[in-house]
Image (cartoon, rainbow, N blue to C red):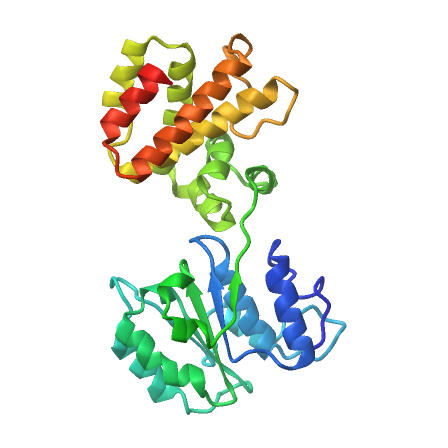
Length: 333
């Protein structure tokens, strides 16, 4: 299965560390019996898990003239279509957690030999949602699985897994991308509607560097994208509006949920960064074009406000009263 890092997982953007680690493991014939894929929602964990399963079962995995996985053999096509009986996915579904019963079902099928290939792969999605009892029930299978079994644990927070679980599988983090890269990636699509094109910049900043989340925001995230427009208007009011008008905006237009407010303030920081960058001819990341007031605002004012916004974010994160924090930002920022 020897493949160079450039040839493994060609369908997966970036993620060089993941590719290099698995390329070396596959090339040496010593791939682990379990891997933990750690990253935020939309960061490519499911895509990576599917590609790993394809690479392990690919019918052309020993042929260096093919990429790994080839994506075209019957095994690869079955896995891509969710039709392979040798790739089993476990998830919490509509439940808050993955309970011990789901792990018992794994153990009931663990010693049933693979049907098509020479490996059987269990993909546990949202592994951080496993209860402590479920994780303990999984331990024995992770410690001494049959030689034909591989586990892939997908998690948004590997620290939520027991240390005993983490010690039995290497953890590989999925890669996050810069807003500039995400913007370029989204803009390269040929089938965007005019409305979606207008959302690109907002989606690139709200996604937190996760391409999957960016695509979802672009197509389905109108509610989330409204935060971007709120941040844009709030930035304008902080820099050019009267304090009374800005306080009215705080009371009537800003989100009431603490996490949404923190996200909105982060976006305000991005907007202020653009305004600072514009003073030296830097690249715009938040704005698609500079607002009319950009030239009138001094660098000193932008730096002072940026510092005040960071303080407001920290105060809200520390459970400060949201209304008090935002009022202080408007009146003193």
